[in-house]
Structures are given as C-alpha cells and as structure tokens.
Image 1 (cartoon, one colour):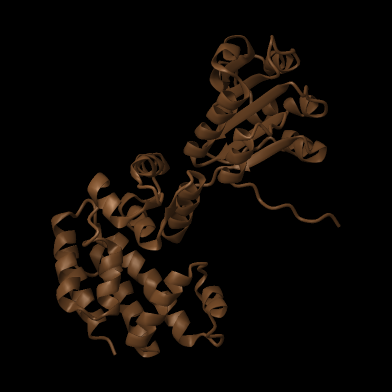
Image 2 (cartoon, rainbow, N blue to C red; image 1 turned 90 degrees about the horizontal axis):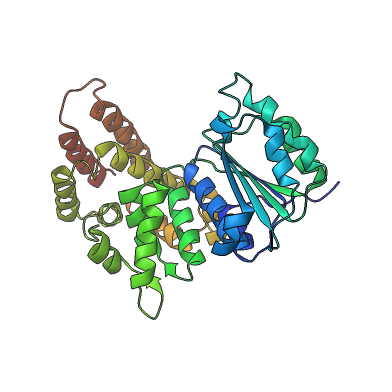
Length: 353
C-alpha cells in the first residue's frame, strides 16, 4: 500500500507556487473564497511577468463559457515567448448555467485534457461555494498525479483561527505569541481578508526582532490589550473579581465588538479544557496536550493554572452555568439583558468551588 500523502495546506501550496514549482492543473474549490482568490492570483503573478500576461494569460468566467471544448483547445496551445501560458476558469460553479447544462458534466470534459496536459500550460479551475462535483475530472487528475486539488474550507472560530494566524505570520518571516494571536482571533474572527490584511500591516511595522506584540496590535489596530478575552481569562484564573467585572463593563460598552455569545463560547471551550486537565490520567505535558487537543505548551500551562483554582466539581458546575447563560442570553427562558446575565455568570464562576 502506498504511503499516505500529507494533506495540502494553503501555506504549503503558496510556498511551492512562489518557488516556481508549478503543476499543469490546479483545482481550487470550497466554501472559503479568500484562499481560492489568493492562490490563483499567485499562480498568475509567479508564472508570468506583467509583459508575458498580455499574450499568455487567458481568464474565463463560468457563466460566459459557451463551449468548454474551446477552452480546452486554448490549453493545448503553446505560449508565446514565455515558458508558460496560464488558463484560469473563474466561477466554475456557474459553468453551463446559461445553456441549462450541468456544470459537473461540463467540467468532466476536462478529464480528457487531464490524461495528457501540456506541460507549458497551467490550468486553474476556481470553484467557489462548495466542493466540486466533477468526479470524472478529479479522479483523472488523481490517477495521473499531474495536478493539485485543494479544498478551501471555511475556517472555524476559536483555536483553528489562532493556528492559521500563527502559520500566516510565520510565512511572512515574523513570529507572534499566544496572547497576540488570541487578541486577533477573538476580535477579528475568521474573516480572512480582514485578518490577513491586518497582519500584513503589522508585519511591516514590527521591529528588528520581527515579533508581533500585544502593544503593536493595540497601537495600530485599536484592539485593547487590557480588555480582550485573554485578560478576562487571566482574571478568572486568578479569581480577580474587580478586573473581571471591569472587563465585562468594557464589553457592555462595546457590544458589537464583544458579543456575549462569543465570550460564553470561548469560556465554555476554556473550562472544558480545564476539566480535561483535572481528569487526565497522563499528567505529562504531552499527555495534557493530547487530552486538551492543543499543541501549545503555553495554553496547557494556562489550563493547569486554572485547574489549581477550580476543582473538577467546580468545572462541572461552571460548564452548567455557561450552558444556562448561553440559552438565556439568546432569549430561551429569559428576557434579561445579555450583559447582566454575563455579569451574573462571572460571579458564579469566581465563587465556584
């Protein structure tokens, strides 16, 4: 049995593209449009100079393509005074809609081209909104091993956002600590266009050490290092009631940026991890990382610090309080103001034993 290949990530794929390691065929599909747009843009700009693009770049949109065979014929042409020609089919999910043909059937015509693609042509298929349904085409690409099939999945909130932030910062030749990545993740969320745009700005402003710090974020993005979720978490670990309630007061004054439902969700994730630490059989750093599903030794240290303050029974009760607050803040069984419910929740957490 052949060894299983590592899954392709946006960052590994972008690295190959920038290094000029091109494949004849790229199928970029999925719910997250940001990665698809950036990858096809990188392929164009790294395969062709600005002058070469005038003669060797073909961009078609699915809704406008009347005959896929003509596009395939373009793929079989040789470049003019260039190593490559690039053929991009954008919005491939709309292929065939004007003439009532199913886009899967139309895209499957590319399977014949995939059997023997021209090495001097780079074909890029961009299919947004869902996974591509052209199984005959994708199976042929897999069989011939002459292309890349990349699924651009929508990024989930929470730790996956932080992991993506850390990977993107690393790709820019900089570094970022957990506190800073948490500030960006909790305040910007999974809007990749805005998130990466802010990181791009910060990467230009970093000092000689190339480190993105909470102070740099606060100064240039307007996210407070004193009133972010991370500080709320620390105040609960230390059972600092005054600081915790001051942070919640700040959240109440900025309800759009600090919605209760997000705060409750983050606290639920945190105290679930603390409970797992309390009940873990393997107390080694590696064991606790495995139990809590994190690769960050720093985060595990936070969970351990909280576990020393909150017993297993306290964590179970806190998780129950969080569930109640989540329901009531959404109007289920209560019409109280969401931030009053949050303050009540914080009091219950701080007094849990």
